[in-house]
Image (cartoon, rainbow, N blue to C red):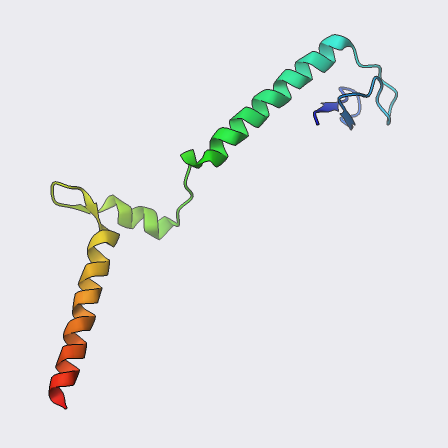
Length: 99
C-alpha cells in the first residue's frame, strides 16, 4: 500500500485518505498521483538493489579480491584454499609416516 506524506506535518497517510489525520490538510489529486509515482520509483530502485547488483563485502575481503594471479584472473581466495588443503594433506601424511 502506498503512503502519502503530508506536506504540512510530514505525517504518513494511506493512499486512500483524502485528508491528513494529523493536521487536516486536504490532498489534491495531483499530490496523490505525484507521491504514488515517487513511491513506485522508490520500490523499483530498492528492488534493483536487493536483486544482487550490490554485494556487501568485508573490507579485508575486498582488498584480498583485488589480488589476482595469472591470465585467468584467479583471486586470492581461489588460490589460498587449495594451498591450505595441500599443506594439511602433507602434514597428515608426514604424521602417518612417523608412526
